Image (cartoon, rainbow, N blue to C red; front, side, top):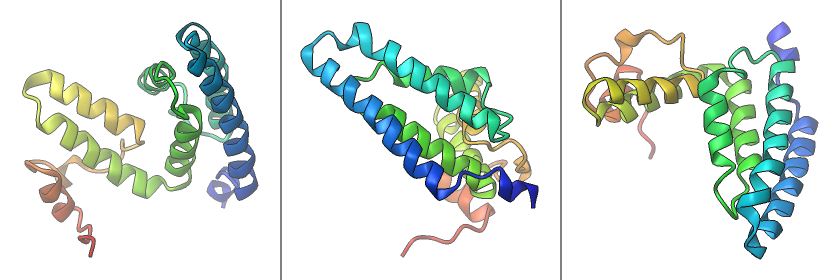
Length: 161
């Protein structure tokens, strides 16, 4: 039952979405003027710090991981996109659905790392898998899979119709 208490509630999702969309809107206007890369990442950095603190207070143990922070702050450089809002909604989904996030993280990790040879591919796959929260799903389910399709068959994920 304690797991239910720490989930993002609907009201928190609505308030957070509007707050981060407001920040993204201000940054969009700043980016539109052409001086955005000097100012917008700084403003969005404060929003990213607020997201991280909020997730940490919700009990997200991986909120302070370097790989997650690097991805979130790197996304702030993209101009004219509502990156704070998108990252907040993805972070809330991953936090509220740990089983789906674990399976998705392992699939994304194997797919991203599978196409690149050597330790670089393995590292990229593990970073994506860690960001999605996929750290406790057994590797034996996707071991030897050469594609996302094979990995999904090993996980018994039904095909979309």
